[in-house]
Length: 452
Image 1 (cartoon, rainbow, N blue to C red):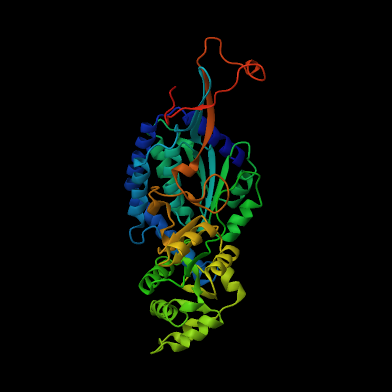
Image 2 (cartoon, rainbow, N blue to C red):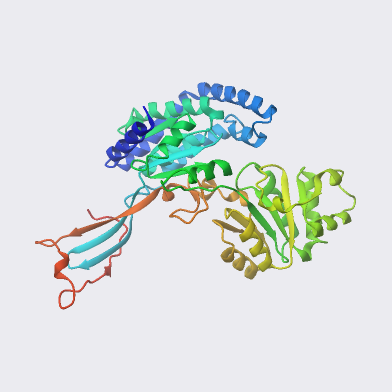
């Protein structure tokens, strides 16, 4: 099929599926999970082939080590976590058909705002093949059809995962083409022109990928281009909390978009907490790009860490707008909480930023004034994740100003429609209302369930 046909099929599958009840969608997820388990060995063998090919690209300098790390589906508990994500999504409440506003406009005339699916999603992502399963689960549960495009570096893996999903759907009442997968950039370019059939584009990947898609389509785009997260050490910070939060934010998964990239330090901590935090970071092999005050303060470290000379360097202006995606951390000094907020708002990507402080007032000001999708107090930025939020999994992170922000789970994949019902014998018409005529009641109805 060409791209227009793919988009048409997706729209038809979406429209065909709208009367499928929620229990059948849950059953479909169970069938998909079983099919993935059945094909596990085959999928992981394909993933191993993708890894071998990717390693060649890394060795040649054409791919980053962080991208390679994201590609490995057999690493640790990734496979089990992927399947657990399906179970988690299946167990969540149905996000559709929920009444979020209800009003009686007149006797026997009622208005309801009801959650409903967006439509057809085009999701473009790099490297992480488990995203195919994550998004398929969210799409099926939320009632959205999806077209998925993984990076070429994971083509073998994503193809088999997509086939398993289609084979699972074929055993249910949901259309087999409800979840489709494409393989080439040319197909993406063509699909970005299919605004008649595709309702939302969700890019997950590098700054270049997201910017390219945003500039190449008239379809609404939801996503984030960078993960420039910050941790601010306030003048009222606790040293133990500072060390735990900063180290975890950096080393738990350095190549993730929610890993910290900039550490903002209040100047009153230069001779106290900052050297202790720096020592802890150097102990786990983090390279520090420091501004002059934080760089000078490290001269007081005694005994000096063995890697002080190799792992501590002066920062540049570019360091504070760079998503390192590795064991590199930019450090800057500020004279006040307000300066920290101004620095973060002007340098971060509005993804997730955290403050370490024992001051409730400072914490409250930070959380309200920092203009990011996530603002945390004494907690690692790595908590910014759909699974950790209890969303089951996520389709991506949104840093924009559209209907969803932060980790986008089921609730971020529904919008709403207005439904009106006249229960009057003659129906209702607008001509009966106005000056000298009937007036609208606008009386709220206390319900979250549609009565018809």
